[in-house]
Length: 270
Image 1 (tube, one colour):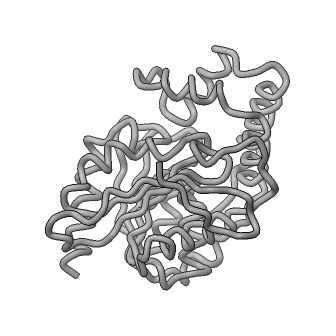
Image 2 (tube, helix red, strand yellow; image 1 turned 45 degrees about the horizontal axis):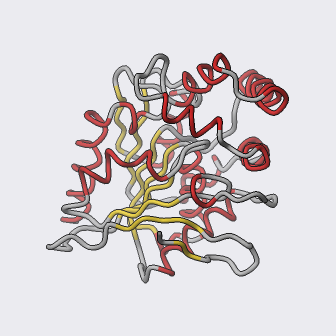
């Protein structure tokens, strides 16, 4: 399995998958960054749809998926943004379209701020530049404390699935199984990073690259109002996924994929 050591100061090997250049190799490289509690496999609907025309790269961030270990030191999304830049360097890629969902969007936006040279374009899905509102933050702390104290019960798992995916989504079971196997050190530290992130709203207008913003109509984790405000600041193309929740690219790829494909096609011809 492909692993890369991206930071000599961090004792971590980062898992990634790379479809390699397609036969015509005409379009941009696309790097997909997953959301909180997710992993590289959440992008399978997009990779399957795009890999014949675009080189697609997915990876597991600190504390997630096959990158996770028994230890996780404190980190920020700027660290994760640097991890992403280092992955591109490791693969010999100068510039790519960066696609991020939720947490993946947080690090992708920061990559665009601190290392704009690696960014060909942005695809931002169910994410924002701002912070959680206080009521949502309180609810998530309560959920985390219950998980850390008593484990992930079926009832608690259903709440997590409803927020991250969407209520009663038939594909939730494999994700719930992964969450139940999550090591608590990774859960706690990754959550700390999520809720202590800074507000980068003032910096959004400085991001000049072309952007596509996609969001679920019924997103419970990131208010559509906040997503629309980010899109306006970025002068981004925007698409609302009807009937979708937070992870709209996973639960409703039949709506999301055509938007990404059209955006990439235009980008390739730019």
